[in-house]
View 1 (cartoon, each protein chain N blue to C red):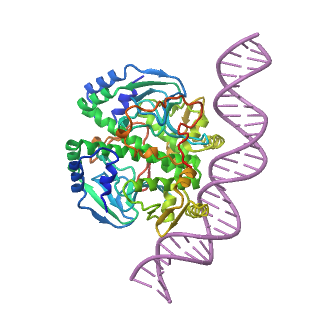
View 2: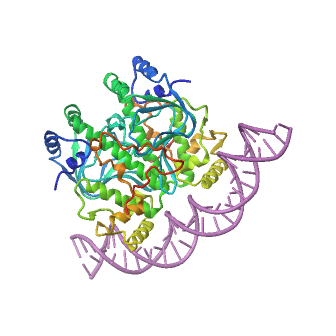
View 3: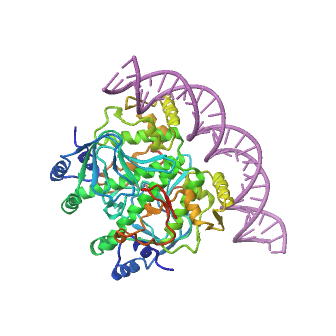
Length: 264
Length: 264
DNA sequence: CGGCATTTTGACAATCGTCAATCAGTGTGG
DNA sequence: CCACACTGATTGACGATTGTCAAAATGCCG
């Protein structure tokens, strides 16, 4: 399967062949990590920069009563702790959800990228800004969206993010999460996740079986979720012309912040 | 009053006198902005880097039904859009809450800092990482903390952040928010904010009157909120002993890694 | 004093969580 | 092939938290 890291960074900068070669070289040797293993825990000093090549991982925090809040999913192509060497200790944990392929980048490798590969450096920066945007959108959902729309919004987001790294087939993608893990991300109880999921299925929006999420009608799901992909910043800034850039990848529609109207 | 920007960055790097002089120069001319004015709106291209010197501002998003979610407060010393020039358009809005003093930094000024002031550059980076940590903590609160603890946690956070820039007197600080604005940040309705506030007061934890938040008992409030300031990264990494205490004890299933963090 | 924003209250409803079973799928060992 | 165990999904009953609506009280400012 194509290299998701390269595929992702293509959205953040106009890479050269040399850039791609370097990225390919860096990601050549990945290690396998089993499901539900901690990659790094809160309180530990951050060590290496990590790259998820295959599988699902997440950032999370635990509360005293054992409740877990997942603060973000990491999917193929995602990077973590890029510049976190500045901080003395992790303020959250990172763990795999499914089995994963992970690449560890030494600080010197990252340093080399920063010094000799300006376009890659730019793309890495772009990627951290996207991560920030994603977290902001999750926060909005938690605060102001009811459970069903919140879940629909997450599905739209994953559809778009996974589409950007070639992990979407038609209108379906692999989503290796249990309902409990979905709940930990959405701030919902397991029981409620189950019920909302059934409601979405009954409304003909999605079906989620055997770790595969199938979107029945993308446009309707996006509209229901009030999904606007702008926060994923997949329309490249340098492609913005006075004339609209052609949209890339899975139908990226949603609410237009200026007009307040929905676009197809 | 002391320069909050310098005070803040002191926490992120070991500044020299020259660094401080430069920061003083940069922040010398601030402009006044009235309360509840937008500084930049979602969908607009980011222009300049902004610095809040005095007053409260916030990042927010609006939903279609008019609901607002505040994704972060910006207090004296906070910076926004540091590197956002990479992105084509804002994915959220920024507005003042109270009247503010704001500094606009041109891209070239930021560039100069980046090229000639490595310690300031480091501190700016640190600051973006802290912002990220704060957002993550808000997300955890929204997902897994009930309203009263969530609010208490926010008060602890502001107490600490404002304390770090010299805006706290004893056990009280100015908090120029209406209850509605508090609700927009906490994801609560105005009515519920009011009731929770009363409950906290009746429990002898805080009082909030005339835009001043008074913390009756800091330790008890922190304990109630399960507040751990680690995510604000105020203990400077370079102050940490070179040898770390052997905290590599394996964490047994499901235990919170932050055990023993609370003070009575 | 009037006008306006903000806070406060009460009554009621909706969303969502908890508890406790039950059901379904999968893998293992005999 | 089946009993068994285990994880994950599903259901029902019930309760707690939080939202909505509508009104009244309070505080602030010219």
